Image (cartoon, rainbow, N blue to C red; front, side, top):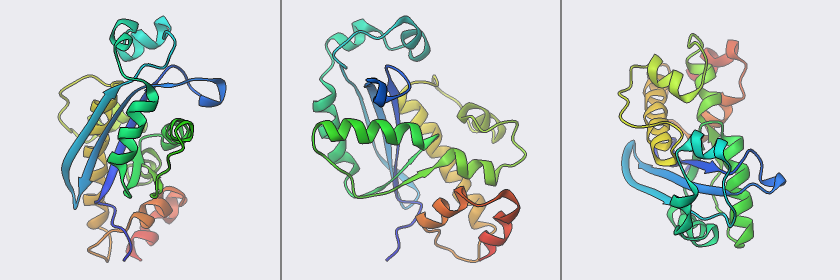
Length: 203
């Protein structure tokens, strides 16, 4: 049976920088597990990357060195998060960023995940072509989704991405000939030229 797009883990990392290839590490993971379109469970942990974060990251995320001093190690947190993911498919806003960090952190502890990724930002570019831009905050404002928190913290960004994802599934359902929307359709949609979106959804 093909996995549906309404059963996923939506995740977000806060990190020491832009690339694990340059030695950057995760400092926070937040995630929401959605099952059949309903949020069932949340996961949020700070993690100590083993070195101080600079002032730019501290100001951007609100995560200070004092907060990270007593946090568990990346290895401990990522082991717990691998269990949380299970065999679910994964979603993130600008997924290439989060996938790089997830892959790098799990590789350090020889853990893996069975699911595949979809990018909510790429899907949103096809679904909301009239949005001013496709940053998460802009899309939340564009869709009038209530905001109760601060962006650039991992769990909050995951929560907002979850609301965006569910809104997109609802919109797609209105244009699709199928009641069940497969995860693979969303992955395909993310790579479809904008002019081909309507045809793809009509199936």
